[in-house]
Image (cartoon, one colour):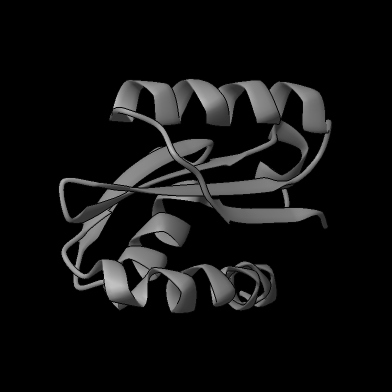
Length: 108
């Protein structure tokens, strides 16, 4: 399963969501988790292609697990979710854990 978990530079949450939608439309099949630091806080958007929803993946659960590492939280729908975190210093660690969280969801 392709998993893209990256930090991007965007001015606001709307642009973060738009970028996630654009990448999802071009990816075909996969999991996308984008993160951006805005005003000393972390914002996350997770999106999952339709074919992988049937395999048990859930963007809301994924983004909640990742945001927890940055002292945050969030959630949302199975196909698209967003979250926030208070600790930008933990962002790289959070992104590096994304694949593990995806794998954990597939095993349940």
